Image (tube, rainbow, N blue to C red; front, side, top):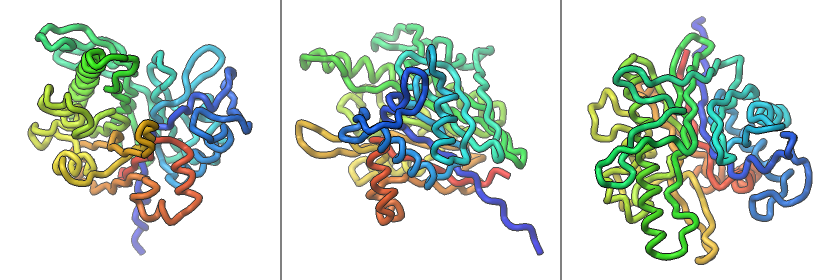
Length: 347
């Protein structure tokens, strides 16, 4: 008899809203019935919902966007591994990169029996994009002048190795929000929105530079996370000629250097048609929900050739999620974003 076909690896990304507030000042899960930062959901309910979601997704590796804050008395790795043990996850070991000051870290959980993940920041050599903890020359004012820019949330660059010996790289990113938070006048809204979009776009250019360096070294790469961007999300997109998503993908570049995500392709290729969505927000003024595609999982062409299968774990758009009442409710309780995954052969 021939050997059974190896089980594909499942890689996922998940922006977990207010994950940080589910742990106390000593990094312990808040196992109580007080309200979480999610509307009318308790700490225990959100923790339980996250566990339900991630047991269903059952990833071999999970890029956690908005992971708990790393700081005095509490450590991102410890909190994630405690959460994984509480939830009974295979992805029980955590890896963390550069801390930031937003209380929204980028980290990863993984199953050490299936994968090895190691924080391995690269860049900064001759002709290379800088490391993600350095600065990047960017035009932030629109006048052509280059200003050194640092990441709002430095991406997590990982060296990954499957149990079967396949090496690849992963970059988890959370690009700066374009929303004009704090602006109180129409003029201030416009100024801050354009400024934030320039920063978001520059962050995407920086990640694209690292992608090109990785591809030049003939290494497979995945880029995943919340890009805070998608086609038509604001009226300032035309100022830049392309979105940050297109920049990271290398949308108009030679095929060999492009990244691929079918949801991005669908959204960008049909700007006036229905597009996939990965997030759901409530507009208190209009008293209704609106949706957006913000979360992506992009792969290089060599990984695309392995015929991966993508999935957005959307409680209303994915039939299996919808008909499972427990999972559907958990997805709505856990976060305002939904997981995105791929199943891919890596052995």
